Image (tube, rainbow, N blue to C red; front, side):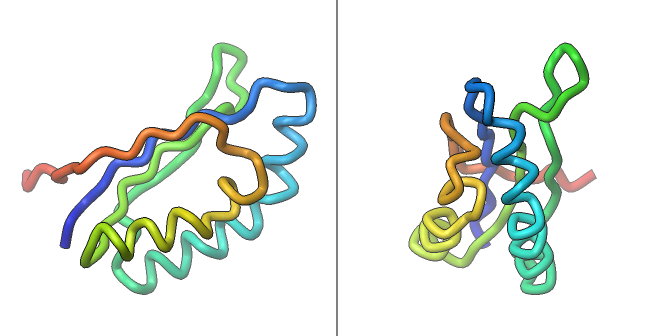
Length: 96
């Protein structure tokens, strides 16, 4: 499977944190499904200087770029306007 690192920054507007918290249950539901299907490797929130969530990092794996794109296009944080700046790169988890 191809692995990917997803680095996503939340919006900076006054409603950004509220959007994150509203969509968060659906995001976690999706992450649990990814984990059950062996697509989720690790993930978590990026914290700003005040310790508040301001983005996400996920390491995921899929059989194809198309499968990854299908997941990403339906990711609740993307569809819900939480993530505004997203970078996706091929990745390889170190075998240590």
